[in-house]
Image (tube, rainbow, N blue to C red):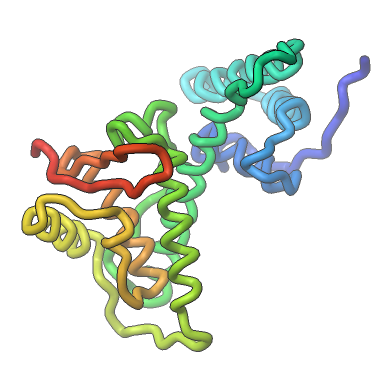
Length: 242
């Protein structure tokens, strides 16, 4: 069977933050849903892109090759015959989808903060960052990335209903450090609170992004703990060990 060729943009490896950044770029370019990635097609594009690079620095190329191996492994699992008697089997793409979702959140939040800094010279912009494969365990013990993403989706959906048609942008927005301090104080006073409760109010989009980034930063530094009694239930936030 002849391999398909895809037209790839004339870009260099250095233009991407890492393998997840490249993968997200290819998914968007192919107009795919992150939740339903066509692994065969995206793997072919990814491998063709790596082969098109004239030279790869060994220490940089390593992480891209690891992702290539992961894509090939997922593709192989999807091609294996499935037992018809198995009612429900975990999709081998799930872990990759989780990584892409959380990376996309960080990337969009980062882009939003940089845009605000340029327009209004605020002080809480954050650089784009690559999310390591096991970032879920470090950010939120006991809570999967998909759970956190689902909770954020509910918050954004609720906010969209409350948001007026015309919004006045305030001259001053809360900084990341201020929001982190406010969250820690609230958790200290209440002992615990729900994830959604930190987003109650007529917040601007900028403040929503800052609040979410503050939660991730506090969890990553173990200053707060994220727990979920059962799937799809509200995520509880408690004080960490620090």
